[in-house]
Image 1 (cartoon, rainbow, N blue to C red):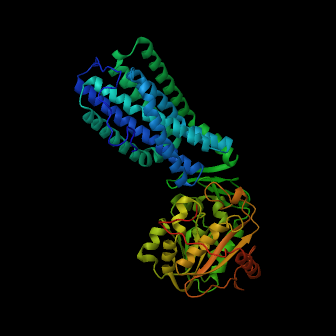
Image 2 (image 1 turned 60 degrees about the horizontal axis):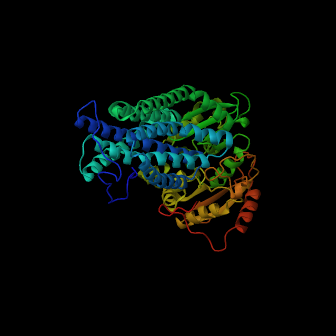
Image 3 (image 1 turned 45 degrees about the vertical axis):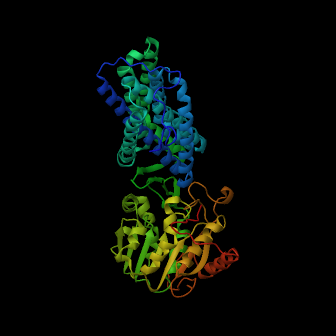
Length: 547
């Protein structure tokens, strides 16, 4: 939990200058009153960290580049907490009322933060200003809590400043632990981001308002008491109303983002999965979005998958490994070869595999690849699976059909360490084909992938294919290319351990619609002309280079 108090080593004074600490009149014994205050600190800290994690998660999902968004959210919130601590000095004369008002405002702001950010993204197309504004506003309110709680706990029973600070911080940090664990393991998977934030706001309002209106009710004037009751009742009513309407809001926002033909929308535990298009008709109208990024477009996916798979199949291809590709489309191309004995698909998200098996449109697009007895599925992280003994020296061909290297969670799957593991899984004479992002609009990313493959001991042949009709598989996170230019091609690298692989397709390759030996070689010559003269350093786990 972020330290929400004075700088480390500086203790607040036992009695603020100009503020006379008078013992409060409580409905319970002082010992019980202190425990109730500390319990409130615990709950408020948990709620505060949930708001913080909510902003981090939404910033990464809606904007992308999780490292940048985490840095922005955390730095803005820490700064704002310092501002809030200073502003709290103005409320020291009325600490009970000030704390009650702050908790009501925090419950409202934090509870509606997720919904507002998503609405900003859905209808305005931009959520960065809202993310910064909520980070600052929530940070100010969180920063004002501890100074006021310090005054309130001293009004119950005077003690030395060090003891009071130790008690408050202990409750604060343990509460942060509870909130940090509740968000990923309870709120997010069970309730989702929107309802989870609103439930957290409800708990925040009930606990914060309850402490002041009951335990410190004698410190409040009649007018202040009614103001706090009205404010908390209004906040709770708004949160309850929004919770009832959240499903309608999600449908409307999803329609604004993806269009009217959303057939499947699910949070799988790994990512958000959205499938659009009619339930009958041509699979060409199908679009599959993963975490808001267009991953499959039925209009032009064959161009991508043919160019990715078939150049790697020129040679022995009895055993084939597909990394990623849970949609079954790369496996479809591999299974067109009758002499393929087995295909192993390593896909992190079982939800994608389940959809590719069961959805009639997607299974038609992948030619019902999952019904082929030659295909086996491993639902595991590709990096972790390659480190295991089952992958060593097994495969004639590896097809790396992974998300764009610019997407932060995918960066490790484009590292030198990852390609070293992939090379170890190849049989002698084996080949690996890698999707490396668009060459035309993001050449630096593309050539970094190629340089990383060479650093892992592989010999490479770069190439690309054009004719894309959509933003399929595009973009590092939410951007599509240099200066937001739409991608014009797909970039690939064919690699092998023992020789520079020849770029071609065999004569007995099943009929292809978009790939030919001549076209591949022309694309390879064009790619070679864009190679940086000085070369680029490889990307590694401790030093990723795709941002």
